[in-house]
Length: 165
Image (cartoon, rainbow, N blue to C red; front, side, top):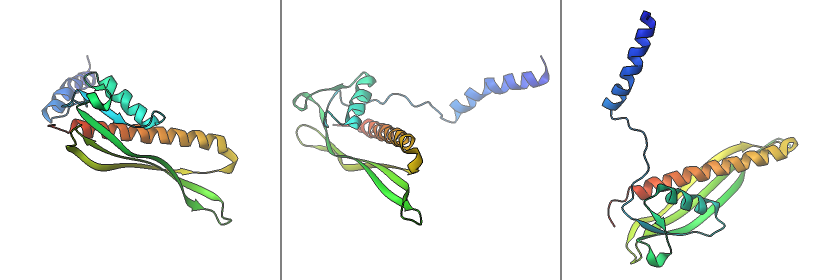
């Protein structure tokens, strides 16, 4: 073996040790203190459905009705917004800002508040061109889905941060 190849092999061998020594660890599935949760979102809410799927895929938490749940996630707002932020000289829209707002609180069935009213907000800017309306609509849907996934991941981390009921 050549010197260069040995150097690369040594670097590849030592890299995991260096990462482990600095405390680096891949993100793992969240560990929740509760085993059942009720999610008060509309059945038509795509964000609520993704959240239910994400919690169910975790394996150790079951989504149940509120009367059998250890904790209840009250969805206070689940909104998508589209705001004009840029116009050209003739007043035609050139840029939008897409927003997804999710406001919630977490409590026990007895009413003990575990997470106070909290709002998660994601926003993305998107340019607009009237000659490419269909592709811009597809891009908009993709951005909304991306924001929704980000909010669900944030929510999962917040739920996992609860230490006691």
